[in-house]
Image 1 (tube, one colour):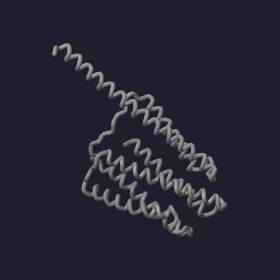
Image 2: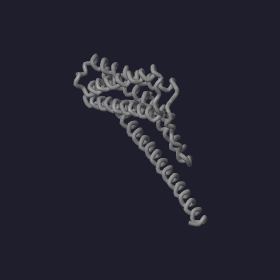
Image 3: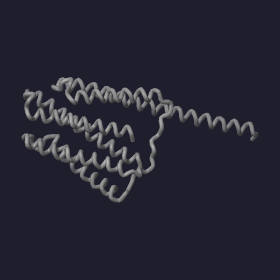
Image 4: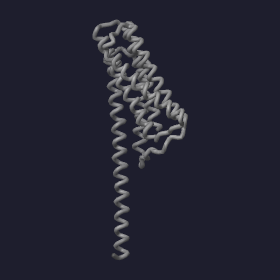
Length: 225
């Protein structure tokens, strides 16, 4: 095979590699933009629902959701202006602060579910209620996860960034499920014609706000990972 033929093959291989990279990068970019657009659609839907359920425009929850919309709009604009989407590092995180941060978030989430069960029982909500059953399940799971995180922290055991991102994503998913359950419970209370000042309605609304605030903190943390 002549030198020209070898050179041509090498050039074809190089061009194919570059094209594959840019096609992959383009598809990844479009997927990320689509994900953010879906978040905006979901957030706008939530805004309409929560206003119907009695949250005022100046309530903390509505302001939090408007803040999320603004943040996601900026993320979409940034992506649209980017040519290359960098892959996140997969190396172990040799940073106790980051591991401690995840452990603290896990502990706060565990405490919130313990308080949910305690307060709902005080309000006379039956133990068969979906929120209480859900909370009991998450208390067990988060307790196991907390023990594992403490073992890693005490033993200076560091996993890859991707593994920690997956853990944060699971916490995010749990938070979304919990918020949805409280939202459905609020809808039921409204259908029962309970007064807006009723203690059960106030508790559920407070929990939706607190859990949404925690969820948005998780989202911001995940965006930095």
